[in-house]
Image (cartoon, rainbow, N blue to C red; front, side):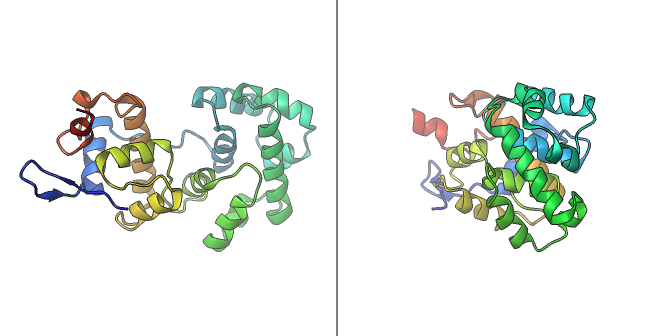
Amino acid sequence: MWGKYFSDSGIPIRVDPDLVYDRLYARFGPQHWWPAETPFEVIVGALLMAQTSWTRVAEAVGNLKREDVLDPHALAAMPLPRLRRLVRPAGLYRTKPRRLQAFCRHVVRVADGDLDRYFARDLAVLRKELLSLDGIGPETADSILLYAAEVPTFVVDAYTIRVGRRLGLFDTDRYAAVKTYFESRVPPDLEQYREFHALIVAHGKQICRPEPRCDACPLNDKCPYPTARR
């Protein structure tokens, strides 16, 4: 499962995640993710992110702020048609508001809307609970845990899988396997996990695209993908 490739001399080379992190950090600098003012804003953003851009999500979050309803209790009690109007810029205006409200009602029910109290529970139980909620998959659950709950858990997304497979770090698309790969090799440090995820996203958006810009890649001397393409 864990990939390796060979140098011109036939010597197997493994790409070290530390090297990947260092090269990406040197190229892109600190990313300061997640762009939010409060943990609850992080959660709302994560729940609205599916199939849209951060610009559209930020517009929807801005609407909630202007109405002074960026609060679990307020969103849990809000009439659904009003919530749909406010978050409409994020798209999927039927499903996203319903899922956002369901999450808020869940937090109100479990912890009276207190996120500190909600997150102050066993991690395995908390993650399983998040995954049981409508619209929350592994990536969203781990984003909430990493950026809102401040738990060092590695977030995997499409960029992580694309970049990792091209570098030969692994040869799987399975979320759990890729997460295990990073967490078994990168010590659990909150700030590094946040930065690493954000750097991979930056790299995947700007350079390691579906049609990659290999000539501009800070890892092109370690990556087998250009050779494989030829």
